Image (cartoon, rainbow, N blue to C red; front, side):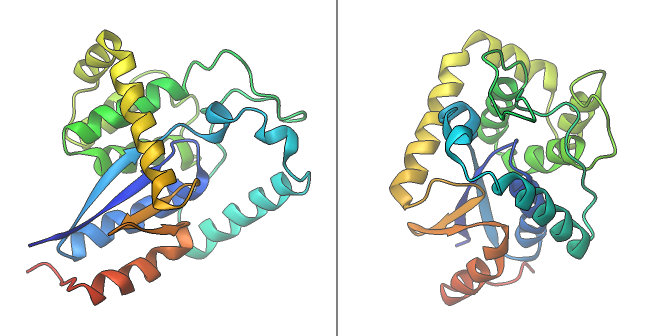
Length: 217
């Protein structure tokens, strides 16, 4: 019987993006299933977070994600536009958020179809690789969904019909993350044990192997 773990994920998190490809490779190599569980980012859940954060944090964040992307040879550039509308100087979160709600709801919809990880992988590349400007326009997301085996128009239609349903699942995901003992993303949870951060994938694999993780035949 294949092992499985939950992946709590944010489309606004650069660290989630930096983890995605390696988790896809993990699922391909080993007999394990990954359950994508999208959550809303801190900017939505706790808008005041950025007023309280240490002012040194943004500079360190940018430095850290760039060097990780360079070390892992993962293309990366800050999204244009940012999935969260936020003043870069004051870090104030805008009341109108035209992108993140759609992304999270689509991620939930993809997960319900059993293709959450594939969708996150393709969409995060479009948003975070630095290779596409205006990722929200044209057919960028449509093609990304198609590569994941999904139909974006059908997903949008389903989400627009019941947005509260998809938001409810995202909230359930956040509650499950809290119950597992963490609050950040990406967090992988196996047997109730949280592994927070893109730098904990190897530790997760170690734990999975203790529980019989085997390579796919």
